[in-house]
Length: 299
Image 1 (cartoon, rainbow, N blue to C red):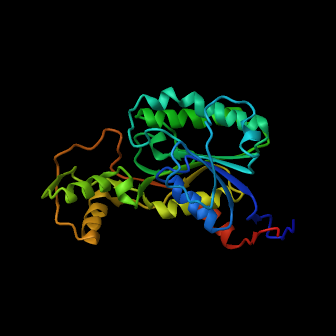
Image 2: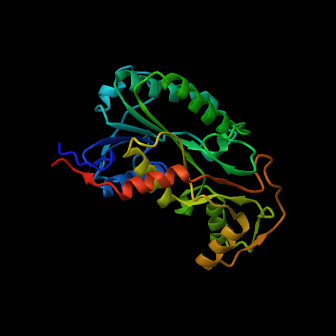
Image 3: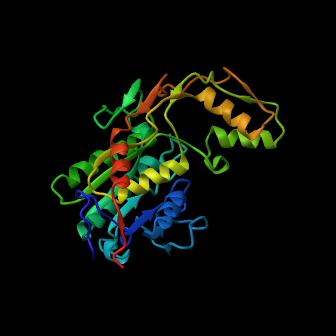
């Protein structure tokens, strides 16, 4: 394969990226983004109805405990592990019940020969925090979802510390877009509007969050797994904080909805900060690497 001198930054279009959770809310966008870039994608999920048909769609139970799973999944160059149950139900018992299964899957993949693994994380690992979050910010998760994700990251850091394996933990922030499928406040507002309701019960909406469109999140995730220079925790975010009120009011204007927000009905969740955003320094480095690189297809 031809290799171009790009200051050690080379991206190959004939690499195979295995995406678990490929049919999920974020996963299907990532699969499409990678395919549009010319990347070979193997897609695994329990439900593959939304998966782009250009992908190599595979039916396989990744939580079987099979130690030969790396071979059976085609020896991918990269594994992007996005599969996760009840991601929008933060205190579901499933998060802790399935924690070891996620660890075992990645352990078996690495022991089988995988040398590049990326795992989807969440800012809910951090728990209550005011201000900017970077990769050194202490974590003290408040929800079962955050606890499980944080425990998985810590476990993998211990397991991989002596391995010759690229490890990226892709920490997502507040995602919006494709709102009817997101199970977010935006999807609930859409449902209420369609039901003809005049008002929607809301918080005060003054908390500020780091919002990122799902399409941009998919782009950031895709570019992270196509390079090896930036490792560890990578915040996939915008790097700025916007009030929830401003985001939702703009959403109502953009969609020309008639429904009005009834402010102050619900209290803020105890683990939601008045203002929180991600440091985007590492993701900006990834984007800069992409801008100065050339995608080598090897054909």
